[in-house]
Length: 143
Image (cartoon, rainbow, N blue to C red):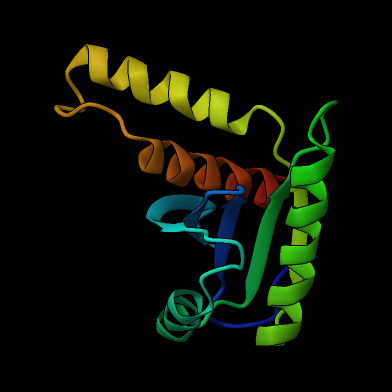
């Protein structure tokens, strides 16, 4: 499904029970960039999400849903989050299996740190944003 919207901007979310990593992606160039990480305290941080959606005006939202064993609670909450943002912003929402994206993101960031590409210690927020980039890229590759 190609995006009909001329903006061709995708926002991807690595949903977690404590944090949501967010990345922007350009469907035309098929590249993704880390944007931010938001704290989750029970409910999604709607004011911050409202601001991000208004600023970026995406044509598509994508939420990673873990499909692996032992992730049923997070998967259920991620699907609820996907339904809620689709309804709240009246935008199409895609989902992809995000099993192991955080592990892959952490491994890549650690390698970049060891090589000197990153100068600071890698934080959990950076991992969440990098995982959101992988979610965006996976969704674009499936289209």
